[in-house]
Image (cartoon, rainbow, N blue to C red; front, side, top):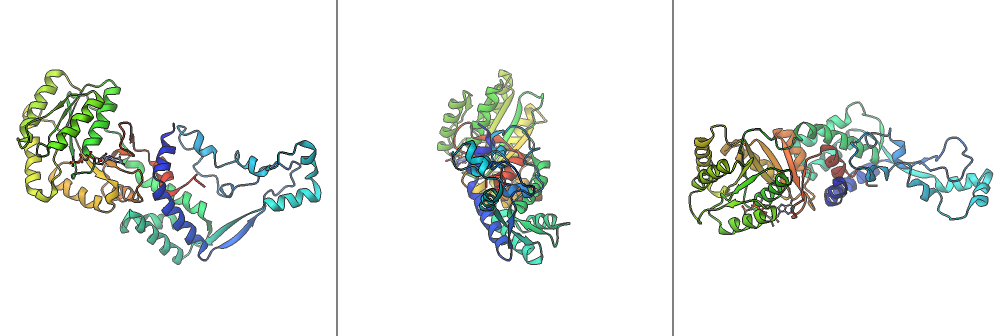
Length: 392
Ligand SMILES: Nc1nc2c(ncn2[C@@H]2O[C@H](COP(=O)(O)OP(=O)(O)OP(=O)(O)O)[C@@H](O)[C@H]2O)c(=O)[nH]1
């Protein structure tokens, strides 16, 4: 099943919030226009009435990458057929729709679309909507001004604005959409950091399962030795993924566990070593020292390690995710992000702010609690899901 449709369903809260906001903005001060269904008199009653989407210059729905064949098709021509031909009456009846009847019939089909002139008021409302969608002030202003460029004074429909927004979001996100880089270095050491509850353990489990399926040999180190529950949880995920999880007694030194795990991974010829860490931001200095010590110790075995420091962020925390990036960049050498819990949150816009502000690679997104609910970050799919493009 196309991941896009899953993401779209699950990001529904975000997109519906934005969609409703955009509808309201266009309706506020917009004018309803009647669309003439077909400029040339079509002989057949079943000629498809143009959908609102057909009034847009057919943007990127078509050239979008192929992996979601079912979704985009739903918008353009095909589904208009059943709508345009609601009665099951066959051929003879259809021919009667020529002439007056035909025109009447077509009048029934006429659709309306509301358009609003893009002016300062509208730009301000768009800015407010994007800020309310967790994009953050700077990003919201930048995105809106790019959307407005060259379009000031033009009349725009909600669909057109949604598409413009999706294009702009895609433009911001494209440079950061990068899968976790894999190096020839073995073991590749991936340090996983993030606040408690952000989804580190779950993400490690999901990643381990994916790498294992791809034929990689993976070892996990349960480096949050201060929480027995965290260790147990990681063991459960390790079992699910079929990957060994190295643990140490509660309260023991995480750096010592990391060293042992590094030794084991080297001896086993593992491709990847993923090290979970504690997320106690309350004790920032301690955490910083703990992470620094882990790095010092594993460098005794491989001075290029860790090869990745993944920061796991919880999308439901909204703007707070921006602070977390600041903090973790100060205490560790964050090389990329994983954003979890994008399912069911109305705060997906924060990802745009993160991309715009930090430019850190977004390697993957979590859209559920199951082992396969981690996907590479696809900016176009994300932008469409966020803005609701293709969903009306
Ligand atoms: N809906 C949803 N829930 C998620 C996702 N990722 C993680 N979770 C849930 O978030 C909660 C916290 O996840 P953990 O993986 O335990 O987070 P952690 O960062 O390891 O937390 P600590 O062990 O407390 O440090 C769990 O209930 C997970 O099931 C996701 O992508 N979507």
